[in-house]
Image 1 (tube, rainbow, N blue to C red):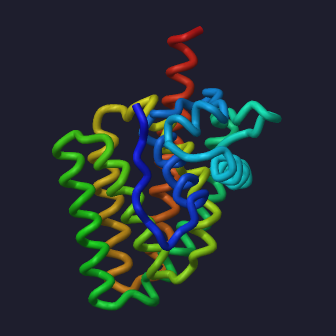
Image 2: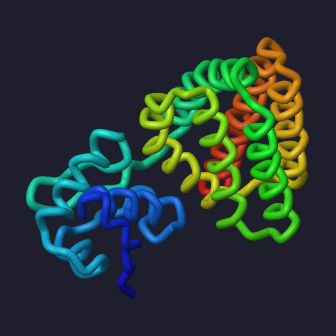
Length: 226
């Protein structure tokens, strides 16, 4: 089944294609560790080879895929070491972003991120995995925008896609999504109160809990397949 790329005419074809492939990794269309041939990608997205090659080169730079000479690319496989490294760095950066957001946030900003927190809670209530992933990423992106640090978003977009794809594969243990709701509310309250120190600690704890949960899931999955 072909994927129709969104018609964002302000971006070149390869940039739109890069975003679409990344999104399709998250949604599970392309699996972690899967080999994608150039011909397969051209047919799937209805584009020529040149933008596919450029999109793959950019995704390789983000760490999402590994290129294969004249044979397309392989979606990067994710292991426990990768997850730990990403979350350790992410915790430091997200703590910094939350603290800066607490210093900068306007009333309109608070209203906006409150809406994203509520959207996540509504998604959890429906059990819709796509909505849960999208709402979570939208919330974290909103905090990054308030902190006015687009570089942080650029650094983590690709690697976060791989983490989201793994989370979709492994699932969440019972009660984890409800814990995330509480953690989101704590971060929101700290930012709304202008308490940069509490926002920093809350965001770091949120990331550490996510890391530990993911590592536990990886161990459990390895045990069931051993």
